[in-house]
Image (cartoon, rainbow, N blue to C red):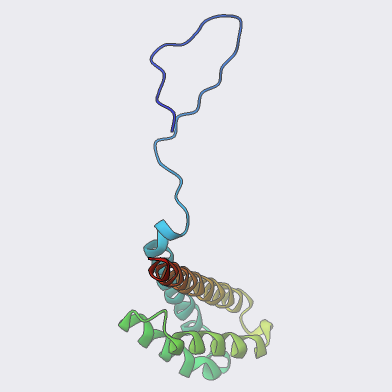
Length: 139
């Protein structure tokens, strides 16, 4: 990064300087935040599912319970969580949107966001392991 200037030339030129207090980080530096986002989205999805009318909630009851258990154990990278989230999404897709359009949309969006965050963290960890393995083979 360039050092902050201590003096500015006042000749016939124009200079625009931007100073940013925070460094911009990539996903790998934010891995904990991404996993915390997965927890937040899963919690919000479970809340939306629990507010559905009974006829819409009934087919999702099992998956909502499984998602809650994975939240308690903080196991959002496990195959069990991924299966429960994907299965819940499949069941939500079968629901008639007229039953509760806002809640169904919210539950779907939050579950997709939770899955995306979980997959992203898994991908970052797998990349880190592959790089470590590659570096170990070179030495």
